[in-house]
Image: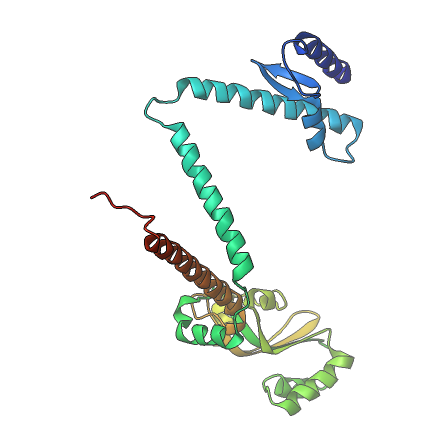
Length: 281
């Protein structure tokens, strides 16, 4: 039924308007107050791979949206306040769009996005207070073993130390006995992710982890051991490895702004030297 309706609309529309309008080879599908939606335009936006029913639904929705947009535009055009200078707004937008496009092309051609690592590190060191943690992070070590695992006292001793010998002993032990072993003394991880690994039932788990850096827990099946070697709470300075991308983006943006300021200044000086700028006051 929908296909028949769509074809009927197409045939009636074409029959009524072909002689009055130059459609430049396109096939009119729908007309609203002299505005035409063409079959070719609809086909160009029709997603590939849709079933027949989905294609019909898409076409109906697209045609309805197109008609509503035409009608809303005409209504708005007839009722826009007299003090709104649309042509000026359009011209201002056109100028802004042209300048933005030119600036982006110029920046892409002339300015590299590469920033020396030392420059990033130096900026971070001088401006740490600008980069704050949104959520707590930590460094440390975690091991989960069954209640029946051997050498429990050794595990208690090893997990509390970040010395190489203790870590190696724990790593060897974990190969045969651990259900889960996570070493992150050398990197920052989310406290929330670590809390998901342990059955810590307290009111403020993040604060608890910060205050109790060595935690041993157990449930009906496992022992859980967590050693926190470093902790950064929400609102504290963000570690360099997490702030690095943000610092780099900031420096790239600063260079872009400085570059464009120089470009505008050069254009002004060139125009002034050629007496293209005339002051009438």
